[in-house]
Length: 420
Image 1 (cartoon, rainbow, N blue to C red):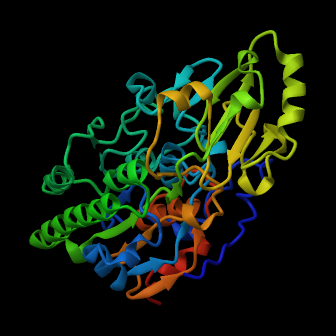
Image 2: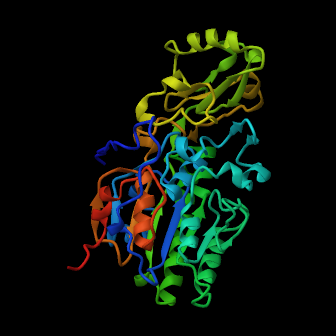
């Protein structure tokens, strides 16, 4: 597909705060908004739909809006981008700057650390849509979405469940439909649904593997169950549905790993993150030596590029949040950054998949499909940045958005024009 990237003035300036609230004419609140369902298929690359393995999703795209792709925010990782989608803020602004990070007051954060993930202080730099909707008097329900386990600004969604990977796609759909069966006073107007099998298969076996194709089929079958359930309830034509992904996926061939041991003294640094995107801080007592390490690492490197956080390219809109490590190294697509010890413990004998790369790379582009009474039918849309999803959703719900980095005007042409 032909990819046309659009530069957004406010979001690409790393020195400015989030953009101002949208004009009032975009957010006149109806008494009972049409329900909005946000579905994430983690790791569903923009071109997976072309494989012909997702007939339910293809039907939604054909009868609704289908973007050529959606550009993730940098870094193109799961937690940063899921929180961007529901706050409209770049990771540098909402504070979830990586799947793994350090905070001077809060300590260590990691995807699998349930205590950290459920601590609302990590998430408090952003205001998620479920909080704004709740303050506007709308009910909300989230079936596994990063941030929903935390008490953010004193609030959870009205209905939510702690993440459990053992819950099947069908069970996730059934829970969402059960929430839609609640009495009118309890029924949510904003709902989220999360699938992760495509991402797991992509990591373990690579994006071109039979396992990814099977995950695409199984996830689409769950979407089919959802559509059937909505039709049985007479809701399918009365609910707006956005199906998207947080990022794409790229193949990492066997042996495509950079060992940091060969480039810097690991005993003098704190390796905060590694993988596709490495973050490095000086250990206490090694600040002066770290300047020399940085100078050496910022020289041209094979298969990666490194920057001091103050010198990250402006187009990435990254590096100003205090949680961002001092030295950042980004691998070329198809490579990872690691240590000799880690590589010795994890010997891969087949190609696998990774994301987190430069968010402008084609392989990082994500799915976007929208369907419902508010959306035009059978139209395509150019690639757009994922920060624009938030003001679009706020408009659909008729609520005033929090300050954000998105641009409603850039995506409003997806919608059926208002009657005059």
